[in-house]
Length: 202
Image (cartoon, rainbow, N blue to C red; front, side, top):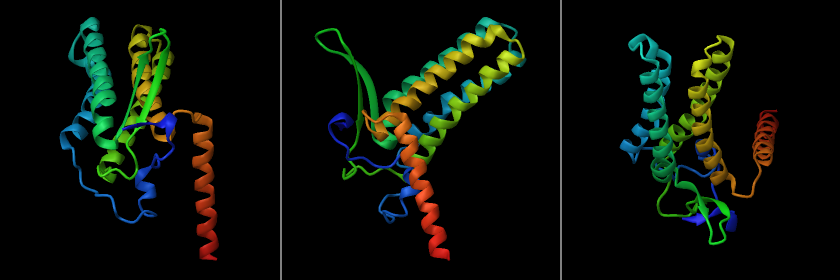
């Protein structure tokens, strides 16, 4: 593993999209089925618990604690296990001897013998991106429906899942790269790709 702050040798955020240009060198099978399962398990169960908990139990405290435990388990699992196994990424915060806090973003080298499976990469990134969006929708629906008692839960869901998304995007794109530059570079590549495709067709 290596720090992205010291090396820019990395692979694309959307591995499945770039695999065509790289040939079919990466295996498409799921190499870590247990990690892939738990990558989605806690976040899906937490989402379902929020949607249907009141139908199953009349105890708001019980529902809230259950959802918070599921969200916490998901955060820990994704941050410490599935990111490292499924896509070769990890991030954490450390405090130096002077008491200063530092964020560390690491990525496995692109030429590492441990290749990333395209299928696992799709599962990882789709789960990582879609779930924070869903919890963001829950925030707005909670405001609109005036269910203020659920506000702390949905905000916690956005914060925990959004933190993992932000951390892994920083790992993928580089510790010093801003999110604005990431988006600009990605959409720039998409525009260029479409332009070249149209030119070839004509």
